[in-house]
Length: 149
Image (cartoon, rainbow, N blue to C red; front, side):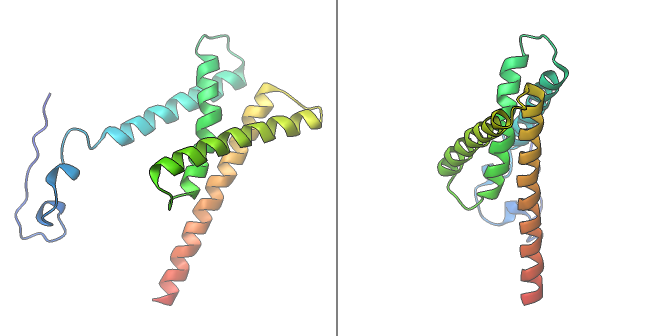
């Protein structure tokens, strides 16, 4: 199935088609691919966390849970590192995801409270906390910029 783009009149200055740029950057069948992939990744990670927490015997449990353990802290750290170049951002966020997982496992082993569901919950909590801190920092930055203007 092919989609047909509709060009608007040049009277609308805020329209990307009138800015003189490359039309393929805002229009075409590939423009919705990134949100679709993000939604699929979120679904897979969520299913992996649920399968691990409920302790379901499934062949998808291990790969989906591993994906969750890498994607949740990796996404949170990537959101915090918005200013980096894409390759450096991916590398730093994956390294941070591995570090978060190792620190959670080390901490749980040190206090003799190791459990797989507990580890999943701890990684989810730390990832949520990182995302919350990023959100607070961005909102505070907007408020400061509005006051200065």
